[in-house]
Amino acid sequence: MSRHAHTTNFIRDAVIGELVDHGHAALTMESIARRSFSSIGSVYARYPNRICAMQDVLEHCIIPSLAPGDGHGADGTVLGWALCDDWVMTHLRALVEIALCSRHEPSLEPAASTLLQFVRTRVPTVASDPAVDAGLRWLTGSVLLGHAVLTGIGCRLPEMDEPLDRLVRGAALTDDMRTVTAHHPARVTAPRPPSPAPSRTDDIATALTIAATAELAEQGASRARLRSIAGRVGATTGALYRRFGSKNELVKEALVRELGPDRYEWTEQLEESVAGGSRSPSPGDVLADQMFLLLGDRTKLLATLEMIHAARNDADVRRTLVTQVESAAGLRAEFFRTAAGGTPDIPAELMGWVIQLAPAGARVLVALGDTPDESAVRSALRGVVRAALMPSR
Image (cartoon, rainbow, N blue to C red; front, side):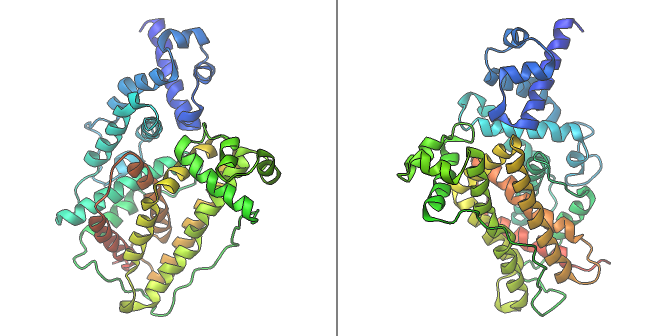
């Protein structure tokens, strides 16, 4: 291989590394040069701009690495071939970044179609009922993308390829997915960690936080401007700075406001569904209601994705986000641990994370235009919850 080709490969690796570590918004020609130990001239000799750099790695690195091959899926698990392959997960994270960037850069649209095709074709068929299978495939694809997104910001996930396989196949084998009987007929209550609250509660601060959510959704984290956010509510930038010292501080506040209900109120709804027995919606239906409530508000959906981008490059925002997500996963895990009783076949910790990963990945799919079949996903979630509460054999 020539020296020129070696340098090109180093630069391509640098582009992928920057996308994975810092996101598409932070990718610059200078950051590519620094990471590849190349001169800025060498980078510009190959790419006129960062968009061309993303197009190049998409065509020459990402698409070939994610194409079906002899080794992919050979272990027989639903997602083990991906979750256990660092190479696949690294390229999948980079693909997610390029696909999300395509919302503002039409020339990158092939990334979005590649990602959607990957999710639709690489998750195996597991259920004989076409509706249930469609729902499970969409959910499982969402879990895979959620895994890529949340591990990218530092969330610590358990080993999940084999128990996730049991969960999905258990859900596929469930004939009656309408009801779930908990081990304990009484109300199941998981312990509550301290509840976070917005640090600023005056009306102007609340309005600014809501305006920041809208600005993030429309402009993205890198293009959002404090002057524009203040102008949305008729406030001055001085009033904004008195409450929030920086854009990242405002993003962190919006993050707490958006993700707070996910930790407490939604777990309480699960507890009430178990306590109510046949008189209440099943936990699977409750989870479906919660997910589609998230996905139905496009502004909040896009804003949350942008908050995740902001977390990549600010330690304080990242710490807040990871704490929120990990606490919510722990709270949900405790619910399933208590509701199942004994020794369930599916680890409660896995269920806690599945419920966090699926919406995170679903946000990406919906942002890229992939609308799920609500009835199919609802049926699949009933089966997932029932499988999670089954005792081990």
